[in-house]
Image 1: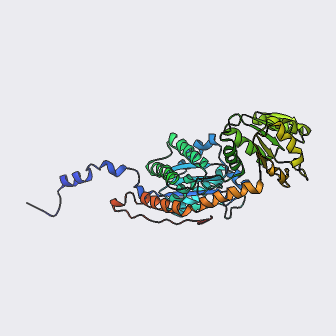
Image 2: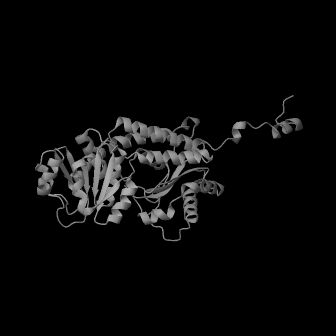
Image 3: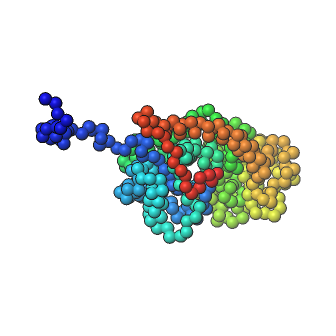
Length: 386
């Protein structure tokens, strides 16, 4: 006989029914959106970024604290000279998530000063697009540079190693790395040199074909000349000689570069075997003119000589460019070449951003087949700081 009321046995069976394993799974993909909080060279000076920087050795501990405080379910901390960012997957509501992450940053770094517009907070889809832009070098100080991709992979690998990521961030970061590869192969965003040092290397390789066995002289021990010398050495230059009005400073830099120092009044004697000269003194007049260089070129049997004058005022008389096998470039020449490359890169930004938007949308909509709509989550702080 059927009845509308269940008997006692049926009620017991209902009370103690087996609950499916799926009911205990982690929150659904779209129920745990990715948010980003951070500060970078776009929004804050180095003095501020220094206050929030994370030492690599303490990042695992910081991630553990972050998750223990329930500020995030999954997290990756990226800390470089140009940015400090937390990428977090969290079930918290947007503003609650951002407040918890900001409170963690302030407490961990023991920061007690004011915070105005230095810190940005991004929800989906901006957070995903931001991650992809960082991976591709579109958010970098040097547009399209690749060093940040290695730093991002290292930050993610550290979080993964210590089990602070899960399905949400794992998928997002792997997709970011794939997008970076696609951007490199399908666009010219990383083509060309955009710094004085890298332009100098390119010019040297044009003139000498290869830098192997080439000898470099640095006249004046400034920061830009040091970076340029390092760039040349990294590409195979054989040796470096450093000359400076302060012999102690010349010796210090020579040791750092693995070269040797010569006294300032003796640098011309080295020209017979030098191939590349980087000059950056504070002299108020030319230290090398045509009359002085012409006999030196005869001693060198007119072998090609690349002169890179990055001093202001200039160290080398422009007339030397009329000597055979002498190639002179000043800081404006280098900057003009770099700017031309930079403009070529900027023209690729729209193409890159279209790829990024498409890939971010695809990532966010993963799981929409389960009936969960993809939601655009707001950005707070700097919604557009570029």
